[in-house]
Length: 195
Image 1 (cartoon, rainbow, N blue to C red):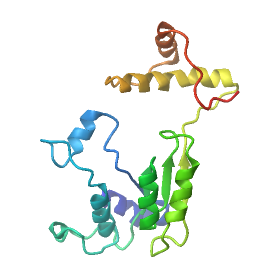
Image 2: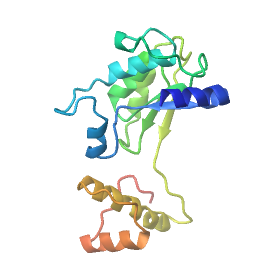
Image 3: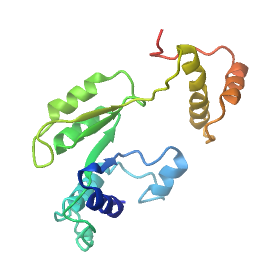
C-alpha cells in the first residue's frame, strides 16, 4: 500500500493523501485475516505500526530494525500526506502528538466535538504540519424532502443492522429495506434527524 501511494504521490504531487486508521475492516473475518498473529487476538499495536509506516514514508530509519532492509519507496522523496483516521479521543491525541492531520469519523461516533478540541489541544507543531488540520466525516443523504431522505436511508440502516447481527449483505434496494423495517414494527426516529 505504501508503495502504491508513493507512486501516486510521485505522479500527482501534493494531491495524494493516505488515510491511516486502526480499524482492520468492517467485519470480524476481515479483522482476523489482517492480524499479524492469528492464534490469539492480538494486542493493539497500532502506535508501533503507525511509527513504522511513518518512518518508511519519511525515509527515516525504522523503529524496528527488522524493517531496515526495505527498499526505498519508488517515488521518494515524494510521499503522500498521511492523515490519521479516527472516531475516538485516543486517535485524536495520537494525531495531535504526531503532528498529523486528523479525519474524525462523526458518522461512527456522532455528537462529540470535544474530540476535535482535544486534537487541537494536543497538537505538536513539527516537520509535518505547522498547525492542526481537521476533517469531519459524516454520513449524509440528500433529497428534496426530509421524508425522502429518511426513506433513502433505510437501505444503509438495514445493511448496518444485518452487519451488527453478523450477516454481511449488499446494501439492499429501498423497497426491500422498507419491508424489513415494517416487519420489525414501528421504527424509532433516528438521533439527530432533521425536524
